[in-house]
Image 1 (cartoon, rainbow, N blue to C red):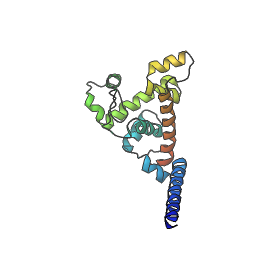
Image 2: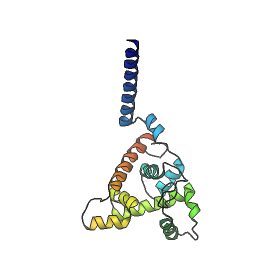
Image 3: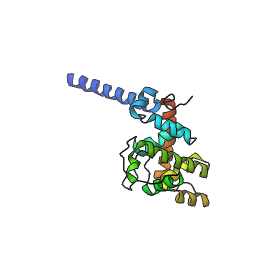
Image 4: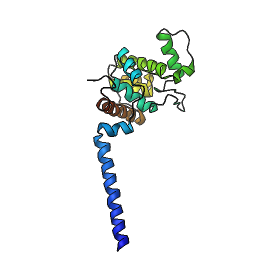
Length: 185
C-alpha cells in the first residue's frame, strides 16, 4: 500500500511539473523566456537594427534561429557566425558596402557578422517588400523565392516554412521579453 501511495504521489508531482512546464512554454512570461531565449550582443543588435531600419526584435530573432547567439557557429553548408552568412554572400556585401578587403575569419566577429547580416536582411526586405518572403529568401535563397513567386506558388520547402514561422514567433518573444534592451517602446 505504501509503494502505491508513493508511486501515486510521484506521478502527481511529475504531472504537475509537466503541466507547469507546458503552461510556461505556452504563456512565456518574460522571466521564463529569458531562460530559454537569451539576448547577447544587445548593443550590436540595436545599433545595426537602427542603421538599417530594421525591427531589432526581428534581427535578434534571426540571430537566435540561425546560431542561438553563438558567434563561433558554423553550419555543415559553410555558413558562419551569428547570422550564418555564406562567405560568398558576405564578400558581396563587403564589396557593396565599401569594404576594401574581405577575410572569412571576420565573420566570426559579432560586430562584422551582424552588420553584414543586417544589411542583407534590409536588402531582402526592400526587394520583397514582405517580411515572410524576405525571411524565406534568407533561409532558402533568393533564386528559390523568386521562382516560387514567379509561379505564384507557396514556399516549397517545409524547412523554410518552419524557419519563417519560428523567426516570426521569436520576434514576438524578443519584443515582449527585451523591450528596453532592444530600444523598443
